[in-house]
Image (cartoon, rainbow, N blue to C red; front, top):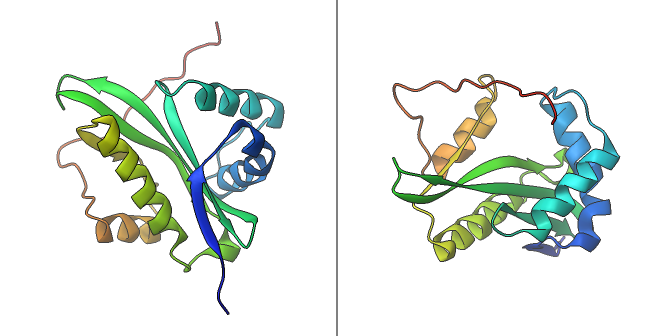
Length: 155
């Protein structure tokens, strides 16, 4: 069966179809605090300001199947603009169709066009499948570094 797979830059009109995917991703990664109204506002913000980031949507036969959200950061260490893949998810029903590879290729092409010098992302320690996917696409662990973070109170 030939399936029609499309990957495109998400628009404001796509936010309604992206929200269920984001919710699935947050459940998959055990991220707490999903609030559809708040997430919709954040997706609108990043989608309306290309200096913040970029959002892609993958569809299979017209159905939302996955998304990739990248944000941009200026880095002295990497000597310019860098991209961080903040969220990247393909719904379980659509895995093994090459959608993740297509999303990643679209994102990396946009990063190069934008002049990014580096792309980074976080992977759950126990997510061996994702780690293998990224390694197949040329990503490697950054030796000598662990991620630390701190949540700040809302202003």
